[in-house]
Image (cartoon, rainbow, N blue to C red; front, top):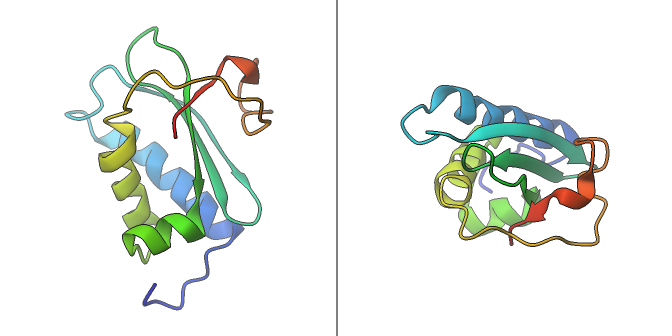
Length: 118
């Protein structure tokens, strides 16, 4: 990163908010997609849960934002959210798979039903 912005819990919260805004504001790319939930695992992990089609399974992605930023060169939470939206979320690459993780606890009624995408 070429900025002094620290990738921490507030940054992760900004990222989650920015991804949620993409669901709200990107009608062309989000046809039938649905935001389910988002959360942060300190210090820098963001959890994004969504459906890619009406009635589809809840898909989950866990972003380790320091690594994600280093990979894509993102300098702001909004920039990284756009990258996640275009690269990952609008093209989910399959139906995901269940994982024995606690990442979705507190975000959905049954976290074991989340299908995680790598």
